[in-house]
Image (cartoon, rainbow, N blue to C red; front, side, top):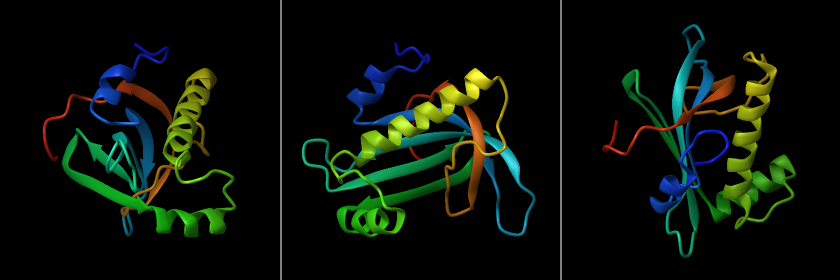
Amino acid sequence: MAPDGSDDASAMEQGHIFREVVSVQVKPVGRDAFQAQLTVRLRPDDPSHPRSLLVELTDEADLVFYHSLIIGEGDFHALKAEQRLRVDFQSFPSQVAELLRRCCHTAADAGSTPAGGPAVGSAAGGGGGGGCGGPAPAEGGLR
């Protein structure tokens, strides 16, 4: 069990780099923003030789809410140049996971949801949020 209450060993056994419930402000186009407890999952396409990173966002309260993004090595190099990242593709997934964990811990230490919390985006338009809600529910198929 990790210090934040998540079961890192279980997530790693399933190939996940990160799998936690995160409080996120979702800003859908043409609708009001709302706070949601999203399960954020990061996992490589192939744990032994990763060529892309799969990012999935789901909401247990809204079973229709499912957003995913595959970031390949070519996409990463464009992102790296655009955002001036200082990591290589091999360390990028673990760095994103660490950033999410730090945002969650910072929000938990502050005791409230900061207005400019972690930026976890999706096709629906993610926004800031704060705090991690602990380990994500067990895998049960697509939601």
